[in-house]
Amino acid sequence: MSSLFAILMLALYFTCKLNSVTAQGDVVVTWERNHPLGGKPYDILQCQTVTVQWTGKGNAEHTLYEFEDEKAYQSCDFSNATLTVEAQVSGTFVVSSEENLTPGKRWFASDQLDDCTNAKMKFSVKVRPPPSLQDKFSGYECEGDFAAGDVVVKNAADIKTCRKFCKRRRGCVSVMYIGGNKLKCRLYRKPPFRAVQKNAQTMCEVAVTSCDPTARSDVQVVAKPQGQDGCVFCNNYLSPDMLENNSVCDSCTSCRPENCEAGNGYCEFTCWATGYDIGKKCCDISVQKRDDSEDCQECTNHRTQWMVENRRLCEDYSFAYTNRCGNEDPLTGSRSWWLDSPVQYCQYSCWKNGAGFQGKTLSGGMIVGDKRARYPQTFDSRPCCPRDDTTDNDLFPISPKRV
Image (cartoon, rainbow, N blue to C red; front, side, top):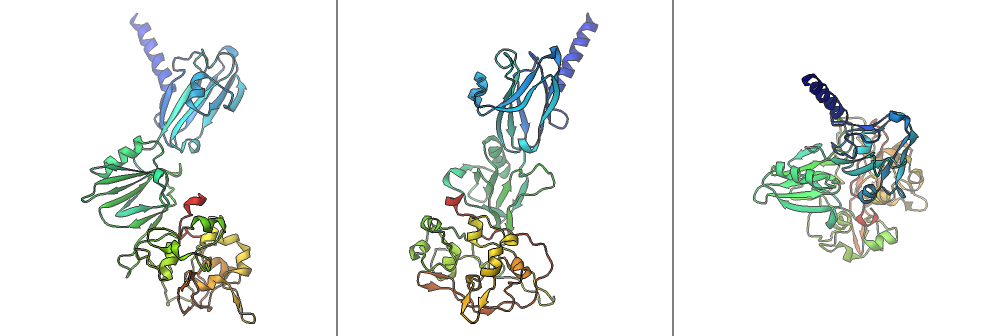
């Protein structure tokens, strides 16, 4: 009797091991009718896999469908379900780690005969964020185009409490902890655009954005410029009427000055550069480090706000090479408005395609209403130092209305 009990316990052990989280945390589901663990809800972390194994038991065919919601899963309603694997007797299907990157729930079942309704050939998967967030920026605060519904604020004694809040909250992908006398935790449903240096009492953390353990998030890490105490990184959001008219902040003669009034939040950098009081001092992103010891200059490759809004890249925006960049015609007096901006947009790609800013004069024609920025200078005449042609991180995030 004791030998029989030992055999049963050993069989149960291997059955449970096959249908539970393995040493690596991945899940294996035995796909057959009336399996002891049929209908089981599984909890996994982001980037773990789920392997479904057809055993061929009874020579019966089974499918694998994914439901769009829990209600359809509970009622075995396949009307809007997605066929993942067609009917087969044996085989293996893996829900990959990349497919399990986004936190949330997923539901699966077979639609053959009464597999779903009576034979327990169904299971659900809850993908949870990992215990710790991937990228940690100590002394930095999160900045991004967060709408009211993207942010939840909670009291938290420390960053560990903040992380726990994020882990438990569905859709949380980043957090910002503010210590000192505030002790606040901000939970975000989207990653920040950048992490900006603040003080030792702040922390910005971002969740997994790739299943590659060596990958890092796309968040820009920005230190405050030297010699610009008290500045903040301003946006250059387009107002609703500017979005409708396909306008841009730079050199916008038709833009209304009221867009620049403090608190409106539109074209902040351009408004500040043209002399409007927007209630804050913007960090001057037009300032570039210059190293005269080299025979070449370190060129950037930043997009204009219009290019950001319209998903254009510096390395393949051929229109810019003939109509923007450093193009000017001394005979007609026509010149690219990029030459009137303190920022040398697509600097490297323009130079590579024979339309560089090198040696050109910046007249300073950024206009909002009746105010004009003046940046009288001549661009560095040295060629660009070797680098790749890809577009650099954007200076400003995309306008919320266009997201």
